[in-house]
Image (cartoon, rainbow, N blue to C red; front, side, top):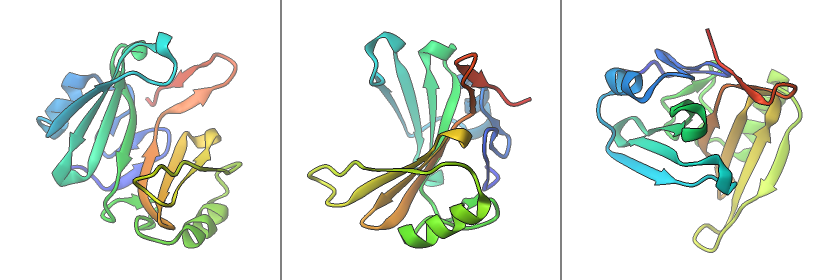
Length: 158
């Protein structure tokens, strides 16, 4: 079973950014679904998202990084962020918590589409964190390894 403590820049329990698909499969078993997609920029190759429905967890692997684990996303209130249960809280409550944690500059973007009337994403680039809000409540936490701006590459955890 996966430890439910989110570690910014590092991973989640035994899951560490930079792991291979085989290592993730050994830790979590077979995913319920594997989704292949192209990131926004066409030259970056393929990406794979592995969805574990019972864990409410997705693991992403990018071809550009030899299909290493490059991000995780969780949508269950079982997961703790800095010891706090954030999933399901209002956008205002989450932003108060984030402000107290002093994680860096927060950027909000409205990403609503027709199916979802109100959807916002809060990004904090310094810690590779995205917080997804639907109808004013936190629905998903997505994070990855820290990014080295100078070298333009991931900083893989030890």
